[in-house]
Image 1 (cartoon, rainbow, N blue to C red):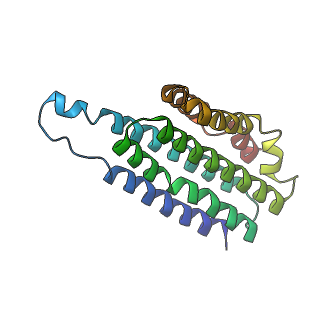
Image 2: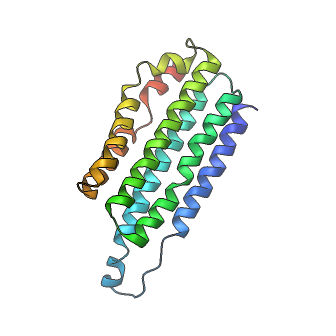
Length: 191
């Protein structure tokens, strides 16, 4: 399989994930501000999830652009990443129905943590397929940003039981860290 086909497949799955998320948004049961107010928590969860899926997709695109070749291991690690991203609509639906509770927030944190692990495994597989001297291998370096993000996601799980809002603040912080595509890969591709 070429990296173009892998990228096209991933684009399709991500588009479906985003479509499912938006279809889960409920129309308010009235036409006034009070009716709209009840939809705010779910809308904010949707917006954060949309940004998170977009960040994974954006960085995935840049990472594949830097890839030299795709092998079977890369395909399976990509599937692992997509599996965890596909659970995001489920978790935000659970948050909508059960509320922003310690369990739902911890579940959201676990899904994001395992998606981050999937991204890291995919990155490792692409470097292994192309070699440490590849553009991606040279660009990654120590991957402090990736390790920090993963640590924050895992920290959000127990912190959800202290306060779900602490965990949500962590999710926003990690999204802000990654909002701009990974400059290491940008430099590596241009170099």
